[in-house]
Amino acid sequence: MERSVRCSSSSFLPSPVSCSTKFPREFRGQKGIIFLRILAAKSTPENTSQAVQKGSKKDLSRILRTEAAVKAIEKKANSSKYNNLWPKVVLEALHDAIRENRWESALKIFNLLRKQHWYQPKCRTYARLLAMLGNCRQPNQASLLFEMLRSDGLRPTVDVYTALASAYGLSGLIDEALDIIHDMNSTSDCKPDVFTYSILIKCCMKFQRHEMIDQMLAEMSYLGIRCSNVTYNNIIDGYGKANLFEKMENSLLEMIGSGESLPDIFTLNSVVGAYGNGGNIEKMEKWFDEFQLMGIKPDVMTFNILIKSYGRAMMYEKMGQVVDYMRKRFYMPTIVTYNIIIETFGKAGNIYKMEEFFLEMKHRGMKPNSITYCTLISAYSRVGVVEKVDSIMRQVENSDVLLDTAFFNCAINAYGHAGDMEKMVELFSEMKVKQCRPDNITFATMIKAFNAKGMFEAANDLQRKMLPDNNSAGTKLSRIIA
Image 1 (tube, helix red, strand yellow):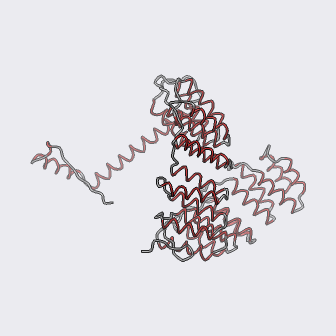
Image 2 (cartoon, one colour):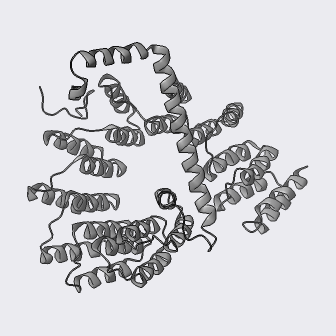
Image 3 (cartoon, helix red, strand yellow):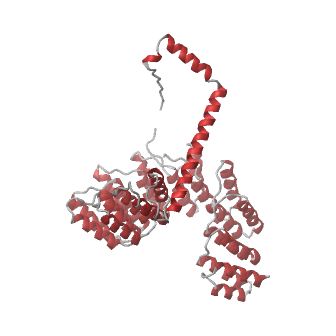
């Protein structure tokens, strides 16, 4: 079998269960046989079915009771009189709020937790809350929570410091995050580890602070901390997204040369994606082959990257080869795969192929999302087929797809481009109903459409109303058009 297959070709390389039953001694022998026969007689299909249904109802009832209790806890979080609540429900409510990144609810529930008689402060809980606040870009709240930890008499652990540094770093406060690292280095019993530095490196890459990378790597070397796969992948991905390809390749070669932290699928996708996004198809194909020689097989994300890269380069034949390979090797395309293909053919004006893959996606049982519909509307608008836009809008109305501001901007632009001002304003008013806040793109699109129609009064009115009161703006525009 070949070890490598080149991207330029039409092909791409990319337990038994045992059961044993043991019976207690008292069930062995003749009596045990009679006992088992009785069980066998009782276990008819009807009885088994009833037992399963009964068990399912009990499970469902328990789940519903738990969910109701969790919601009740969230309501009680605003009150100060509850101090002896059931621990399991309070902790589950806090867990759900953290998992869903509902930071305001999480902090209220945590304050309620601290008032309970049975409460014992733990650094682990604080670390999880700090990590959530970092994900929600709430550095000020993270700072207050850290002070609360100290007031509870806890000594911050490495995880707590790391989560706090991450909260600053993810919000672009790199210097503040570095101060946390320096505080850790000055503490004898709480030194930063490879995970701490990996997160900080990721933050520096995200906010284009590339000059800090060498400094942090030098600190790690001085402290005897070796780079992990995550560290190298953060560096490679960051340099790749910044189009610093030479530094990216140097970091990759250093990773390979380390002999400990070897490249993996994340490394493959970062390198191939960097060259693909940069339009360097030759390098993309070269490194795709190199990773296969290292024994790293592609996944669906890799193929999505290849399809998107070939599509951008208008290399539709190679794009089709990747799609065919996925079908032959039973790689299941995702909604992202289909959205990329639909967008590629839509931008190319190939409506027939776009619709072909849209139908294939639905036949596979995949539900289109707002990105799918937005892509279709843009493509139909681009070629001037307004009736198709109407058809897509009807499909959206009859579906449970979650709409966002980007979708409405797309639809508003399509109807504005077609000169249908009434429909455009209708969609603008519907944004309030769907809780989608208009942004500057929404207003700029509508103003441009009004000016193109010579409706300068409506355009000026919208200019004055831009963000303060979206609902009244929509109402007044409706009166002007009528």
